[in-house]
Every structure is written in structure tokens, then in C-alpha cells.
Image 1 (cartoon, rainbow, N blue to C red):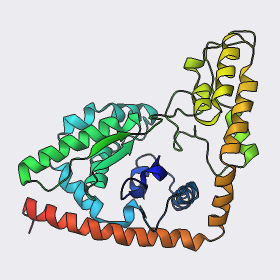
Image 2 (image 1 turned 120 degrees about the horizontal axis):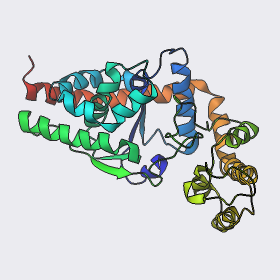
Image 3 (image 1 turned 180 degrees about the vertical axis):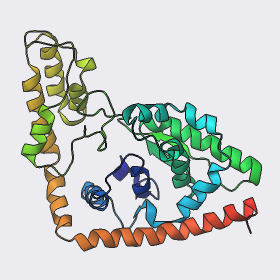
Image 4 (image 1 turned 60 degrees about the vertical axis):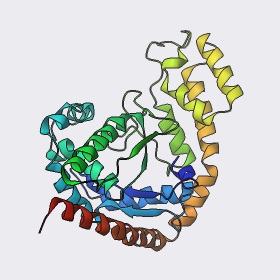
Length: 300
């Protein structure tokens, strides 16, 4: 989705390392994870000569705007957001301000660059609506400085993880890393939760509630998907075989991606150069926005 948008818009994509701190206690792998994510983006087809790619914390203006926006954000609004309640459920022993203020920082990420369109999954829709409301509040109080972004839901708005319950997420360890080898990918797929009501091989399945079948629709040819659906409903195919077919198609889909990724990984300095150049371009936009915001708020 992000790659295709480059043909329609001037795109800005950042690795949100500050957001990651809301869930991370051990940050020893944060730099490495940032590098790996950008490798994925480049291998997928992001074009750094056209698209600004950078690390969130490399543009310090975002934290300044986050602070200013927090001053016009009702606490009750943040506490009522379903995403905050879900995060509290997921990490009850690490409920920090960052979790509560996550939507405000996200709003700063968006408005700092005056983004007009933001591609998100369905789970982030509430945050975008919050951002739009926050922009209206700020502009009403201080003048028309910030841009109210439009929401663009991704083609597959929400991808569940291997647990079949939560959104696919590295922090929940229910994801399938694109950097995995074909065999590692297969092993990961074979751990995926399927139809919870199908206890035995002879039981008919219910594809509409199976996360593996949902992903089949994205990576498996339509005629094979139709066959799997029919055979699942009649117990003609078991979950192990079904997951094996999915693993084969997933690996085939990412074969070229893995080759490109290996080429980029052979030159780590290039990745960091892309991020340094992206941060420089992003800061130029951010500095102009912050100057407008400070003037509107009448900060000395």
C-alpha cells in the first residue's frame, strides 16, 4: 500500500521509534529494528529519491509539537479511546504516560508535515479521528495553522497476527517477519491459530473465521482459494495442509523481495544515508510548521 501511494502523492514515511518506547522495556534492539524495517521498505519498492524516509526521533520538532498539542487535549478523551484500553489490557505491568499520550504524538507526527492524506488500518481509525478533532480545536483557538488530514483505509484494513486475536505486531510476537528465510517463514505459518471450533481433522471448517484463510485471499490465486474454501467446509482439507499451501504461496510472493533485500543489506551505509537525507528534508518542513505554530500560540 505504501509503495503504491508513491505514484499518487508526495509521501513521507517515518520509523516511529519514540512510539516504540511505549511498549519496550529493553531497547537494546531498537536501532537494529529500525534498520531492518527500512530494509523492508526499500526492498518493497520505496523510492528515497522521491519519498522522504526518516526516523521519528531524528526530527526533534515532533516532541515540541507533541507538547503544545497536549495542552489542548482533554485527558478524558484520551482515556476513553479504545486503543488505550486495549494497550492497558496487553501490558498491564507497563501502563505509562506514553500509552495515554500516544494519539497526541501521532497527531504531531501527522500535522508537523501538514499531511493531507494518511493511510491507516482500521485499528488506527480512532486515532485519525482524534487527530482531526484536535486540529479543529487547535485551529479554532489559535487560527488556521494545521491541516486536517483525510483518512485512507488500507486495502486490507487489519491483519491479525499468528495468534488469530490481536493485530499482527512485533511487540506481541505474533508477526511474520519479512526477513525470515523460506523455512523460517514456513515454521512461523505452521504455528498460526486457525478455526477454533475445528478440533479434529474430520470436522468441517469455517473459513470465514479463520485467519489463515483471510491471508490466503491476499497471497493465494483465486481459483486455489475457492478450492480451499470448499474443501475446508467439507473437511476435505486439514488445517496443516491448508497452512502448508499458504506458506508456499507466501514464500513465492516474497522471493523477489528477499533478493532485493539482500542487495540492500550488503550496503548498510546506504540505508543510514537514506535516513540521514530523509531527516534533513523532514526537518526543513518541520521547522517551518513549528515556526507557524509558535507564532500562532504566541510563544516568545
